Length: 231
Length: 297
Ligand SMILES: Nc1ncnc2c1ncn2[C@@H]1O[C@H](COP(=O)(O)OP(=O)(O)OP(=O)(O)O)[C@@H](O)[C@H]1O
Ligand SMILES: [Mg+2]
Image (cartoon, rainbow over all chains, first blue to last red; front, side, top):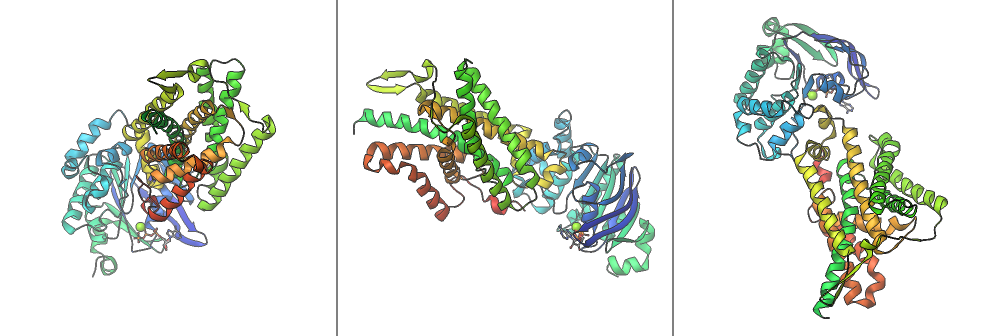
């Protein structure tokens, strides 16, 4: 579904991503883990052409090279950005409407689905998104991304700043979405939680892929355990 | 001061305020999405007034001339954005501001070269210039038409902004452009809509101005534009309702000053800027304003 070859991102002369290759197959949950500044967010933004990049990114058979961010989203790529970035000055419901900007026909139906999936935001649909708690905002950000009915859903550190119990809920939801047929690319620092729901994973260090493999092997790997899973 | 004169002045104030309001909305919308004070906005109003003038003078019915003027202003607004502002989206805001001033000079001088600087009498059809006698008051029909049209346009604007997905996108854009793109929304298209709406309203304001003070010239947008800008800041830049409130406050003040303190009449243009300075000193976010500077992360 997504094939990335030799992806590079530079900020001026600083290399944030140094020629990485990876692949996401249909129906998988893939996680991209790494510590602060490893280049995870840069990678996701590069996939969507939100920032300048080099290398080849093929999504569902398309070469994405000359596409703008918004056309890639229309083609079925969606990103839940780091820090949620819900539209704080819009109501919960309006946030969902924005997610379905190009999906008028299914808006009503999807909205009800989202309120079923996340009953907590359903109770607050006319509240300004800025008044939601961090966990609720994360759910709203995920719901908003789902409103475009993406083929590939990318999430940038969905666990950031959430209580462990809420992290569990969010990850459960991600698994459920995969079971409903959405392919997932998950970026996380919370390596243990990410690996425990993933099929495969890539470990990013200083803009390069240091290790990759099946999630269950990585979870058992001593060096990974030491570096990312807290010993 | 008798009640009749008072009523008369109120009516005039509403009418002048409406014009400022119509023009102020454009400043506030563009500022909301681009953080740009579009100094060319007053000149876009002038383009609208000139288009209406030439269309009407060459025999086009007034109603159609108004539509042509709105269209011409929209096209001018969209083109300034596409040609001058869009290449600077990622540039420092000050570059954008200087460019806007440049566009303003360009439009003023272009029209000066093309049509000369001599004011032209703006002839409106009789139904626009009639004066009604009502219980001893003299009421030009314009003072009824202008606020009515303004209110209708305002409600349409608020409806678009609050109820349609395009309006929601405009409001989102004011806070977070990259995330708007993540929704699959072409942000440049939404910005184009903003310029089109603001410019169209400015054209209507310009025509009202031309009908009320029946002459136009290439520099007509300068002072009116600045006052409308002051109105937008007064009301709270970024807020459409605020722009309208600011416009009315300014219109009333000006009329009241001239009517009740004729000795200060010569300073009437200065009041807008006194307001502007006071607002910037004591409540920079204006009456209805949100703190947009801090809100875009
Ligand atoms: N806009 C920018 N300008 C300059 N350098 C940047 C910019 N954004 C990121 N970087 C640099 O690029 C590198 C990778 O950053 P990136 O945000 O991709 O890391 P990350 O893996 O997402 O980290 P985190 O887990 O903290 O979110 C870092 O060294 C960062 O300092
Ligand atoms: Mg990051």
